[in-house]
Length: 317
Image 1 (cartoon, rainbow, N blue to C red):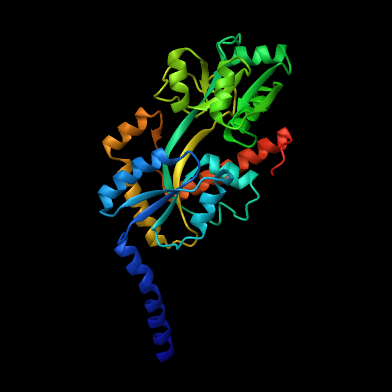
Image 2 (spheres, one colour):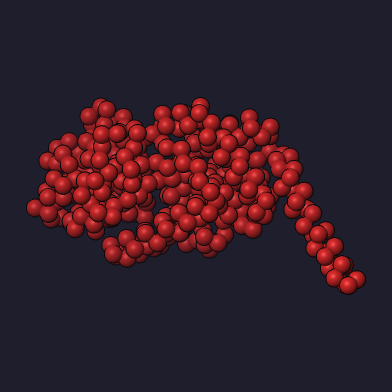
């Protein structure tokens, strides 16, 4: 009995640091690690988290390696809730499939929750004789190999989404990779490439100006930014569904109590009307989820794109 009591007391004492750590969080500034080109949304959430938590939330940009540097910085940080990763679908593709990464994103990061989703829009150059997805597919089948699609590089979301269209639409198109999405978009507008998938914030101004034509949205539901635009599935491409997203991941082995507190803070901030309105004005959709739901999303994205890569004969590098 004495031995049992001693073991029980020892376990209680070992749990005290984690309990105190979670109950005191945050007691010092928090940093959000962001990969290339992901700082705007992080700064918006960081500003509101600073107001809520009473501690400064700073954005720490770590570009490079398709998000690998940002992931590596987070993985090596202390699991105490003071380092967060602004994770994205692009980081999942880049680090999970295309970089020579030593990390398993389903094991080496702790999900805290999804924060927004971003629809992707199928855009075509105005000279392309198609005003619907059905017409585009018909045109592509009548001209095999003559259409091409642009992306911001091999292995990017834009590349794999185009490959998904090829597979599900049963059409033959060439992929033209560029060094950036901006360069790819410029060449589509100039008629050097025929179509491209763009996120809603990038697509809306081009639709409004008539520089590119929008045919469909890749998400499961229509986007409020372009409510008259059908989804790819509504347009007849069964099984075509993908949305870009942003979430928050924490270092590996972050205690559940800390994850719970971080998620609660994200939920409070994400549901504020002023933040939701600002996010939606940028063409994004608030989508606060549970940590478990974000974990499942990462797994499903990895499985989806591995399948696309296998079908297209793309090798991870």
